[in-house]
Length: 358
Picture 1 (cartoon, rainbow, N blue to C red):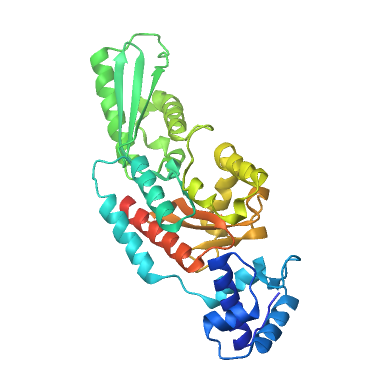
Picture 2 (picture 1 turned 180 degrees about the vertical axis):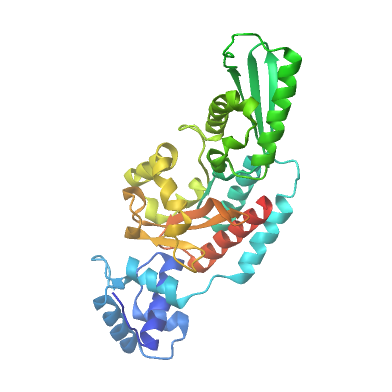
């Protein structure tokens, strides 16, 4: 539904949202006159607030004469009335660079450090998804004979993550034992072939390897290699119980008045700790589902499909490796959020992580 507001109505909506974000108290016309120097009478502001209420952008809690923004009111505020804070974005990027410079940090340590910094700066819950390892590029593969008839495949990704898998070689048709030295040579040739085909490609591309390119004499190993590669790639995938989303800042956000009800807090904590797989599709969207031209996704209140966060706002942006989105960074807090700061923080963090991974 398209809502057309006059300049004055936009100004009153902007001021009402700002005041409510700052105080968490329903907003009256006198407060807006006193605080924002709107140079019109309280009666004019009351009139504008009445129009905004009829349009569903403000509502009046039954306990108060003041108004508070609805999800729709916040949506217009975010889409039309503010721009993200550039000074804060620069500050965040500088802070991340200064604090996370250690070259020998693992990727997980880097992401944990970033999550903690964002939670501290924003005052909201920070969520950073671990990169989708299927988009990791391969640095090196090696086949090694461990003992008679047993071969290990070692795979190293560009971030120096390693996985290995040990398998029994298929018996040759004539059942003759292959000489160990000959096998070592053949495994080296196969390793060279795998590296020539797969180095620099993502784990998810391995399935497209053209096995007809393998010399005829090595065709007997084709099925064996397929099985080896499938097994080793599966080991790069985080286990169901593994940490998919790094979470920081829960204690900070729970001090907000919106989280005063124990039941609500418990369902939120349960979602964050036990049901991360439900959060994953919300925070990490496939490129196809992203709005064109929108770098940051802002889901306000009931726009969130998960019940425990339908009174919250989730702001997220993907971080990339080259052109490929591999993970997401986001903040979760009450709908009464300082949006220009939160959007700037998320955008700056996504840019920093994209740079760190490239």
